[in-house]
Length: 491
Image 1 (cartoon, rainbow, N blue to C red):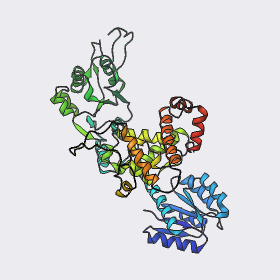
Image 2: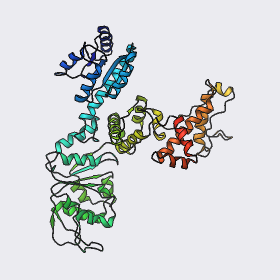
Image 3: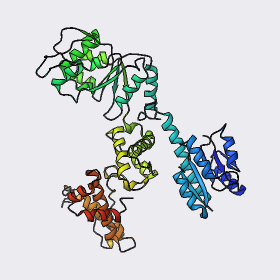
Image 4: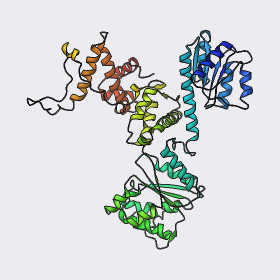
């Protein structure tokens, strides 16, 4: 890790911060002026820069603006006295990571600098982890194996079979294989064999001649011809109809094919990359996939790990997708708090990277603040609160037990009540918990939480259209606008 640079003309500030960072095990270097920093930048780079605003020989704001032009990813923390607060606001507009008010608590300053260091290291990971394919990111060992395999296959034109669950990025890997191959200047043509009706798939793959079937008024080139000199990516090959598998095998074996209704053979100068989420070995055993085609495709196999197998990459991917969504929507990039990140890293993500990308886009639109917290995550990620038994003291005070499996006379657990009781039981447990605390506003607080969840769900289902959400909820347009403002959902 590169050192943290501290810039301040006050020697005591430099000394205190430097000693605190050294005790925290962080490398540090200090400067007395912006001019000294500019000279050092000619040969060195910091991990994070912490700069005062007002210094002789150049201001911290000017230094920040210069750094943002040359090193936009470098986190810069601006130190300011209370009287410089307006300058600190303009510092944010110039791209500062955060500002530190003087006088500051040293421990809080170290924590802030640590966050900036983490941000910087993660940004370096985004910049270097992906083989020029932005979404193909990963520091996990399983993904590094994939990257190494792509590198080893780059000079080859061998057929590759990519396996993995839906949403793991199989097409991105196919694109990377193409882009790093000798056929990189040729076309990359993709077709999802499961998404095209059986009756049309043959024509889509091999093309057809005029008059080959009803409606074929002109000849048409298929995907094999379109991919001439390049790569044809056959996605979801495991779902290809059995009769078409024979034609595909012939193309792979003989290197030529016929258009539908055609009589002249056409040479296929195409590299084939196939992908599937299916267990092809099992489909061969079930008689649903030709064994000879399986062996023809399975020359080199690349398996993509599910996202739950590479949880250490979730942080990296979240930051990338939030940045991408913000750029698409023209808004400021949001950050995820550590507790919210822990929730994301514990979630199974059955839809894999595609699900995470969609979630980040939703959060960019729906999360009210610039920092995404646990309360901003969809309920299906957070899950229901854990049901805890009522303490004996609470029971003695007259609290009702939390509803659960009813006990029969024989002492065995009877069937649970209707499913609707589950969330009501959780609500009852939460209410009891709050009632045991201080304050007399339990009803108001619970009502606000209920309204927040329901209104957010309605806005999500209508993609943010308030009038439609109000109609679905059965409330007026003015009511939902007022509720959104009261609950802080438009911040």
